[in-house]
Length: 67
Image 1: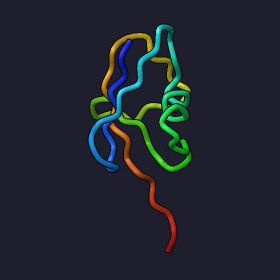
Image 2: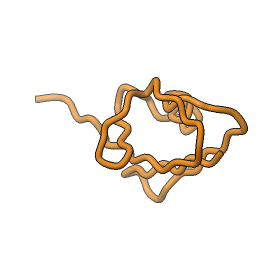
Image 3: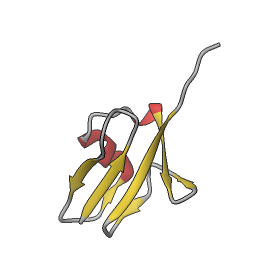
Image 4: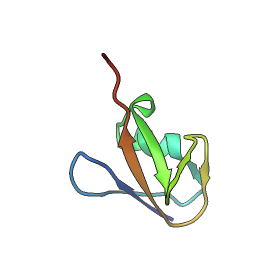
């Protein structure tokens, strides 16, 4: 399956997997700390523990902190 990841750090990134994969594993492959982003599918924030079983496009929203 093919996972397209849209994020603020440039163009989309593609991750391919022959088996179901968690969003957290996709982030790990892209060297993105899961604590720094929210994963959005359509208009819904999805947990990083969500299993991907089909071609999908997700968007990453950077979580800012500080004050």
